[in-house]
Image (cartoon, rainbow, N blue to C red; front, side, top):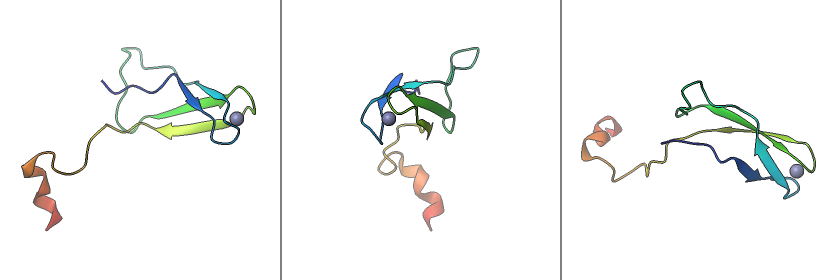
Length: 68
Ligand SMILES: [Zn+2]
């Protein structure tokens, strides 16, 4: 299941940034969901877009149809 990290490393200061965004009522996360993190050290906010973990190629042979 797609799920954001509860904690990431702050890009600015290297501190810990914690997930602010709560999950939906059913606990599901979808591809394209935007989640926000707040750094405990510099208080910067980081917004990340969730993406399904797909290799992008060599996945399913049928997917290459629209590449002309
Ligand atoms: Zn920071």
